[in-house]
Length: 141
Image (cartoon, rainbow, N blue to C red; front, side):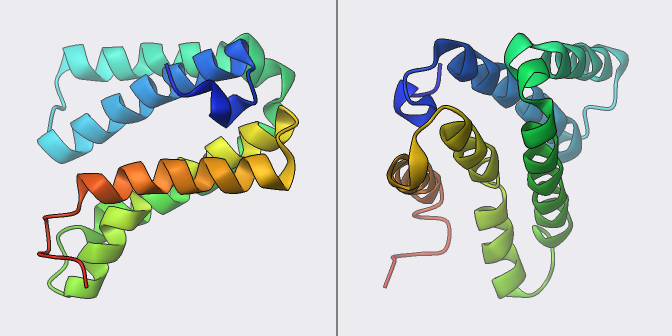
């Protein structure tokens, strides 16, 4: 389960982030690994239903829908750019793969974290993403 710091201690919000994470990973695995088979597609559809019918999402769907669409748009661009010949696009693709930070920020604001909570959550989330890509392009300068 994601850190309760992201959700200002709201367990229902943290659970929704977990469900969203499972759903987004299932979508990502289909795209990245070419898993266009019945099992993976069915799992992805089921996770989508669980994600968008979750009580936290339903309660805050007006705010979360926009954040989810922005996140999805950035993720789609990352998929497009990750295999481009231009190094800068591949590097940006790695960064855009962590577009879930948009949802983390929206949830933090919904849960009363304010600017300070959102800023802290952003740093924590993106630092974890950076560590995943630390060695991919050589030492950081």
